[in-house]
Amino acid sequence: MNGKKKVFAFSLLICVLGLSLLTVSSGMCAEAEYKWSFAQPWTRPLTDAAFTKFCERVKEYSGGRIEVQFFPSGQLGSHDENFHAMQEGSLEIGVFSPYPTLVPGGCVPNMTWIIVSWDEMRMAYGQPDGILYRVMKDAFADTEGHLLFTCSQGAYGLGNNKRPIRTTDDFTNMKLRVSASPGGVKTLANMGKGKGLMLETVPWGELYNALSRGVVDGCWTMWASLVEERHCEVLKHFSDLNFIWDTTYVVMNKELWDDLPEDLKEAVTKASLETEAELLAIQEKAESAFIEKLKERKDFTITWLTPEERDALRAASDMGPMWRELCGEWLEKRYPGMDMVNVIPAELEKIHKKVLAGGAKR
Image (cartoon, rainbow, N blue to C red; front, top):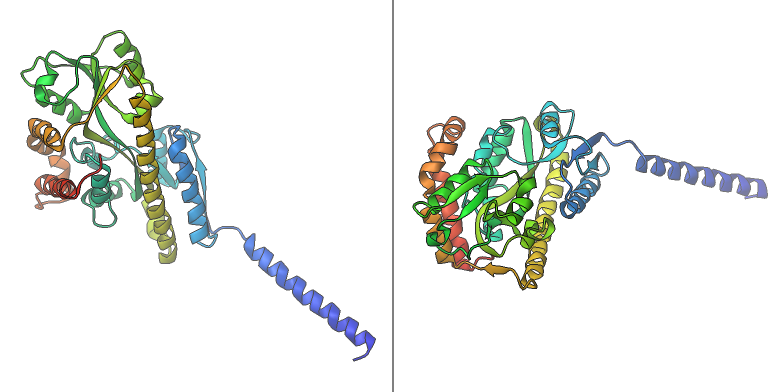
């Protein structure tokens, strides 16, 4: 081969390589087929980091075909505004509380004593067979949503300035703050029945001042609120009843989900399951850190209930009639003839006993 032919062949090789690199580069920079927004109505740095990772996972597992942009701290509006936007499809994904005014089936996770430990949380919400996962998937489907995964801040106990609470007698002549949550209010009323217990509705934002001024003796609160919202400064005692469990839900528009190709559904589901597991680990670790901080306070006592003490308070709550009163209508409409008003509590009781038998985490 003479010199000119060598130069020509070399130039041709360079052109081919250049075109190949250009093709690869163009593929890497190609526009995503789906561009979604994910709205978080609250300011919660701990969970926001995991939600950001979820967006990255979706992009990775979908091979770049789906891009999700996360908007924290109410950037896309209030909780209810985001929910309605998700329903109509102008917002693809959001994180929501199951307010029954928006999600009629939200009456179920708003019941008390449904979960009292992280282990129970994992079992009740485990995909695809957990009893609460199945029910809430249906509940959101009824409101044009598809449940991707759950996230939790943990359990509510009772804080007060009179005495540790272990038994129903400890509610004697106490005034506790409550919200408009029917299940929580009825539960406290039943546990303190005949003991002179008074319940006072106070907005959450005014709770610190109400406690500091003695307007109420105590309230239901949780480890994060004791530290981050400084409830420990105006409370002397905290008992870990774990009778209310805080759970929110990451949900996307159902029509959008239904129209996705199966491979992309698998990608989003994989990202969802990994993020859900990560969130549980993050929240458990954070709870342990909050507890250690509270232990350092000399003016604050933590009362750890035994499983027997907690179960006695659960029995005093008389939840059976409440299930029918608060959830019966929706359950019968959603699951006609299936007696879910009794099936769900029975399934949750099985989980509770199984976890206790295996040595439950708090």
